[in-house]
Image (cartoon, rainbow, N blue to C red):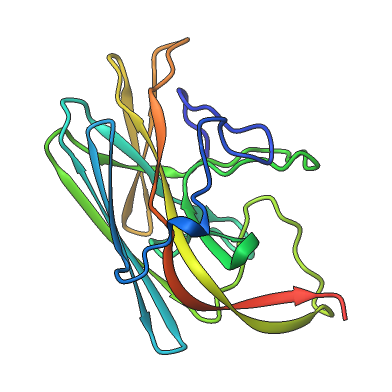
Length: 222
């Protein structure tokens, strides 16, 4: 699904202004963090429940005078079409960092997809608040939109990663934006279309790295 007014990252990286938070920024005593940007207040909390479950709860408060669209309604097309709050991109990074992301996924430089993916959106009107909890089974498995599926014969091992953070994409409503809805299994899905030639102001909310030991599943060639 694509909607007018978006910009799809065309390389394997994020926009130039996006900086991966380093492990040196890890919060040592608390797994909660707050970021303020573009009139949005972004709260994130991570909770581990034994070795079986990781919960990521985030909240966005829109203190500005513009409606905001969160790019958080990611869907899967394989092995069947599915959309639910627990679908999230998972990247394993250097220094044992897990990066969770709900945003328009970047296209790796060596991949030429036949179609580009963009999430459906959640509107957060001016003055309103939205919150959501993502449930992830452990050990955590990497999930990238354009990655090739790993061969089943690859060996597997569990490692402990040391930190985690969340990125959430957003766009702002502009004059003339038309919102569109469709129904899937009783759920209302929203996208939007801007006037021709008009792009929505957009950005990424990036939480600090939280120091947390997380079991992850690594696939490798034996």
